[in-house]
Amino acid sequence: MFCRGDAQQLPVQDESVDVAINVESSHSYPLFPAFVGEVYRVLAAGGAFCLCDLRRVAPGESSAAALRAQFERAGFIVDHHEDITRNAARSLDQIKQAAGGRLWAEFESIRDSFDQGRFEYHHFVLRKPTHAHSALKVG
Image (cartoon, rainbow, N blue to C red; front, side):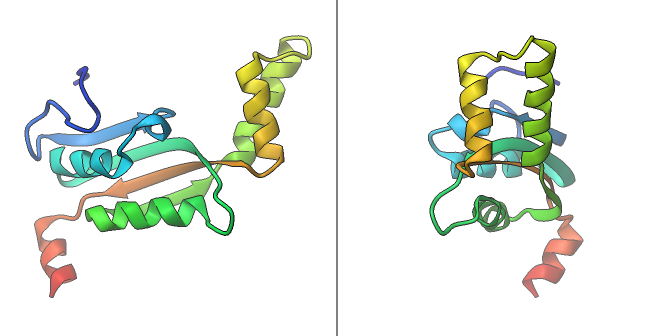
């Protein structure tokens, strides 16, 4: 099912979705924790949430650790995490080469930001615990 709506107030019933996918948009949500909470609300027990997105790196802070903490606060289990910054940079390099050595200005800026360590790109696969797992986790 695809639907249009506010990512921070998903127009979907509680526990009615098996898989949620978010690619390259969550970095622009004003209230990222609200979005994560909404995804948790709409996922069925055992459901999966796949997210790939870039994050600005704050001095002295790992963006991966900050994301992991937000996901775990919402109740998710992190099944997989991968820093795909180098993959994204290589992809932009390939696009640049295919385009004759030039990218759109925003892509050039992102590519430079990867090299300078200002942005990271992460891939997470998260799972909403089953009720049995939740009981074990609490107890």
